[in-house]
Image (tube, rainbow, N blue to C red; front, side):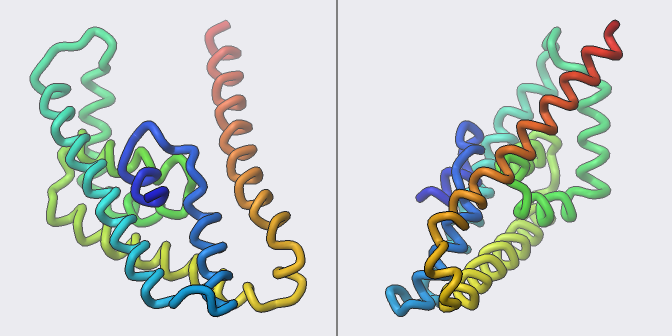
Length: 182
């Protein structure tokens, strides 16, 4: 449910998807779960979450394109649409590996009217690579004695480091915007 919510609901970008995938793989290595069942269920959750998020974006996107909102820059909207026509597939796949970005990319793809066929192909491919890659890493590293001993610290690092990087990037962008405004 957490992987579905993180990828499918725009209001939950802070959920720790990567961490859960890694820990799930580590649990599989200990024999607590079947790795193939876990990967299958998590790919299903990730792909269906992205799909829901995409359709929310498409539903809202129609209103964005047909109404004249003062707060919306039409030129930026058109640039986003063009960007997703050219780079949308890569964006959907690569966003899986970036916390916070993975929550917003399918939504923006929907708003930008990325074709459903193209979105679905890259959604499934990216979801399978993301889930398979991180669960497999957790599975192989989960039996290493040092990892078993320090799993709690690894989990905190996997939560803290991406969060700290996102906060730093946001602060840096805000500071640059403030300096440019002066």
